[in-house]
Length: 176
Image (cartoon, rainbow, N blue to C red):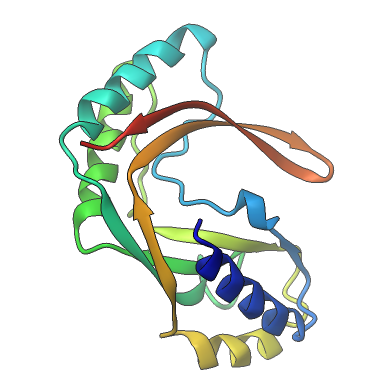
């Protein structure tokens, strides 16, 4: 992630923390855009997953994502995720749709819900401080936090621990 985007998101997070909402914040190095969550995967399927990613990614040229807007999932009344949006016309949606369909070849089900490209900033533990947080979100809901150049996608492994997820790169596949 470019330094200017990290900096702007850091400033946003500082402001959001003033609401004293009950949120577990994502470490800055762990902020990412999930194209497809795979869940538990058998080691023997990894090479096939990477091959599928390579076949799909070679059809796409590198593109830009604008990090823009802020909100909560799934609904404001009972939020679970605090996010900033990622916009790239239809490129990211098309790439995600192909990855989604491609992963069915290794037995990974397609998601029922619509893809909403975003970066997770934090996860709600409770709704404490939500109203104050909504006021800050309202001030920034149309703000742009910068541009990310996407030239590859990565297959990531996440290991969960009490201190949060630790991510490691399994494979990186270039676009184009």
